[in-house]
Length: 242
Image 1 (cartoon, rainbow, N blue to C red):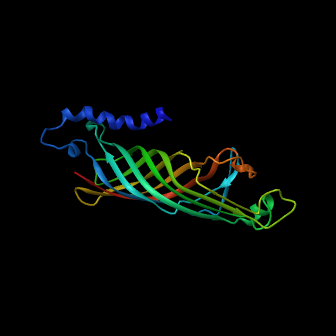
Image 2 (image 1 turned 135 degrees about the vertical axis):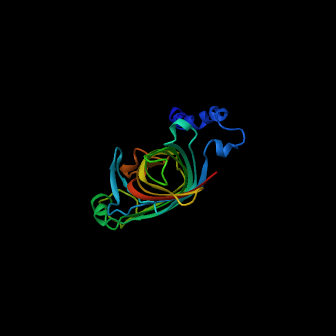
Image 3 (image 1 turned 120 degrees about the horizontal axis):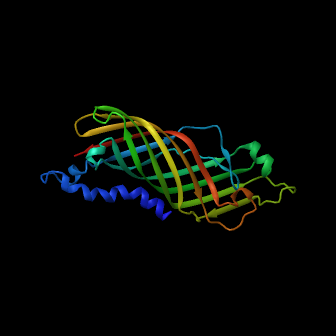
């Protein structure tokens, strides 16, 4: 993981070597074409509530809203179509899974589970603008995702069934682990004014949230996968450039 992080952050470090090629009258933000603003992301709704993973079946969740700060830079004059990106956001997920067919087949009648998960997400990557010299340009990009858990609560309950060897009620708190994923995106970038831009697009993210709990009788958690996001979503951001 250290090598992957280094590969993602290396272009940002190399920007310091480019400073001497810019006029001294420009400040650091201008020399490196740094843009700062805000972003929002929301997954498209899906009728599927569970998915298969290596460890078994886990809940499939849709992110209701991820918001945060977006920073980007175009530090290489000869590669002005390339934009480096760094997003940092916060999200709260409250999910109730009550797929009755799933519950009857695996854990008894009226099986439900509730997940509360608060976390910070760091996304770093790049974006390529096809028509970077124009006011409006299509773009395509890719990002590496790193998720830092802040709060985790899991509750599962079902009707009593003597033929099912599982607790009627189970509650766990904490135990969230650092998790990784990736995202690809595409859309349009528009300069509203000389300094403000607006980006609209769609993305596909694949992220598996990990936890560190003791061995449980619910087998799909055997691989430490709590839930997954495997969805298409919508993204919006606005940034100011110097």
